[in-house]
Image 1 (tube, rainbow, N blue to C red):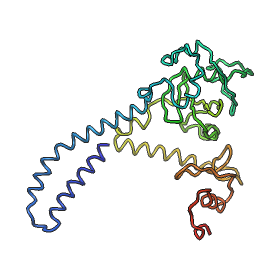
Image 2: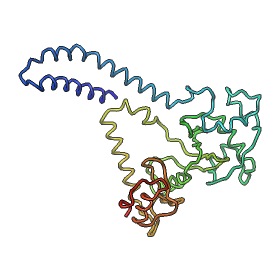
Image 3: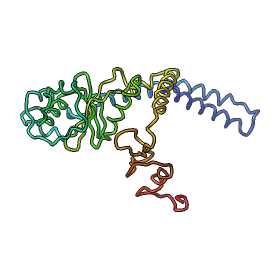
Image 4: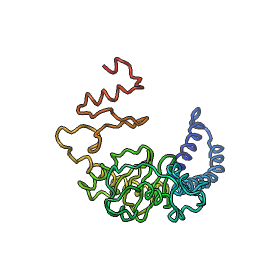
Length: 295
């Protein structure tokens, strides 16, 4: 960011002047100032180049298909081999015209909303071929974000989050937010299906651009305003009172506690007291805490 670049530049200039005055506060610093003046003019241009490079990298990250040799996100590659051999991989939009060459077992974790069923053209009460129908739709749709193990694919006006080992509590939490805090602009959960070990969670799409692509170009005032808005939403979430006697952690779903300070770790069972919570933190399988600390 330009602001940070100038902070580092000015700190470097100050350091050079301070070093010149360190041994003699009455010394002539004209040579130092001349050197700084000569080199200073070069740095703003370099800062601008670095900022432009960061912006370009961020835009490329938000459009990951430009970097791929194949049209599918990594999270969907296990299913790409099911496309009939005569269908070119460079033309995934033709998938709707061809059947899949294999099928996968599926499980409906949360029922699909009428919007999703209509999108997939699934009749009420008919789901024997759901995995093939779902994969055909997702593989022929447009990925809008991805990393090495997850992807978000736009299907119609909504999106589907594709991931291995997705925490299914996310769907329940989004339903909780929709029910109790409808003013919070979070995506609305539309159903969740697993195909093999891959989860497909359907969500409404929030319009706009991501902070990841805009952050470097935002003013300090705009960033501060975003923080205030997020603070308001987080405060509203924390104001929700769980039923008396409820366990710590997620307010719905499995009701476990999750520790993500380093590697993600989930409590083996529900936690109901501070002492149980502390025991969970201090007694993981790989804990390095000394015994006297645990006591």
